[in-house]
Image 1: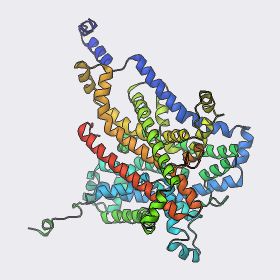
Image 2: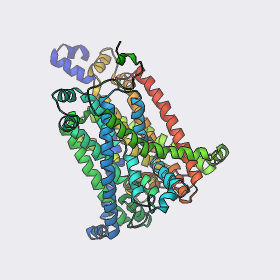
Image 3: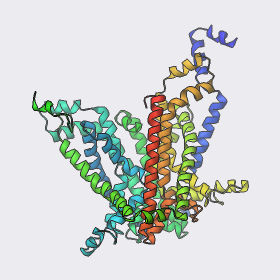
Image 4: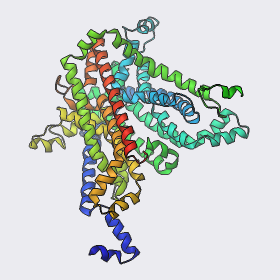
Length: 296
Length: 285
């Protein structure tokens, strides 16, 4: 019936038949799109909207007062300092790890890659706790450091260490698949033309990986600035001293100071939005140079 | 026979690329300093407890309940994410609709939004007087301050893992496979359920494992919405924090060790299943 009818119309009929046979009924399509949109609305769009609405609940005046508070200011400063140390450290590590793993063949490579991913499967709370065990007053080196006036826990070094632990794999994870895909022929060409190792890295490898690198740094930074569990365990929550922005959000929220909590939260939400926009731009413009990393 | 071929065991294959020693040296020292020494400290502390003490601490009723809640809610949330994550990935790969690009970018929000912010936002939304909570309360559904709230927070946290592992594999599906199935007389539902979905199984499993592992350890987004009632809605990471604040390091160590062991065991099992299903079905994922 309809089968033969459509087929006999020739090529246009065939394409139509194929299209019908390999796509869903319109109702099913609308149903699926509707389900997906509801889900995204409930779990992603509305929570984000709630942050901004709650912060503005008592008007922009109060919002700005909160942001001008010295405690907020010191939380922002600490967050920037911590990310400013942790991200470059993991950037250098990420490049070194990707260079070793992607450009060479050696025994135990798969195991090394697994070890690098380890922090992803450790709870943030445990990530902070390991440093409490290592540097706490019951540990071996804790009392010794204490007697030499070095404060690690409940101070900035502890927060930095916990953040480095948590964000450890980000850059390496983006770079390894990308550099593996690019292979070593560009570098070999440069070396055979007489370039030194560093020249090859700066003028050949780095330009090849720069967008993937930026992509990794972006994600690493978002996590470094937003980390909560690990930092919460090592920080000691000293107001104005060891509170990062996420910890400040928690303290204000637990004091039922909701407008203030959400006001600080808007800054973090804006950071997330900027991260997402930059990330999408990178994916759109330089998809070929980060494509490998999206497929892990 | 030259000396080079004489050595059977070779640590690395020869290459003209320089910098292996430096790169591997930096990688290993950083890895050992930041990750391995701290983690082995935890292993050492828990072994120093002695088996009897360890067992006593690990089988404390409050600890068992906390572990059960953490693993149970993470499992449920990962299941929800598998269902809706696959639908979302399908919609994003196959259909065209207004705002698609924005939705695609939004999927990564849980990666970028700090967990504490997500936690207070979800709590406000699903509290009995919140935008969604006030709609659910008349139906007798309480989300915030119950174990259900934990599941909701973990769904948020785990969502991108499933979508982002399934999406690229879906994009690679060869249209001809579907055409062949249709030619052979399969209807659309059969094509999807018998031909397409089995091929996605390895990717779906990976997404499930990642979302589950993340959910088990999650802290920031959960503690605000959970209500944190001991034995009922208290997650294991929170109990660790409570024990640390009491300076009860042995108890905290025991809970952490149990969590890590179970997580690694589950990842191992899932990896094995995954390798099997990849051999059985995979699209070369």
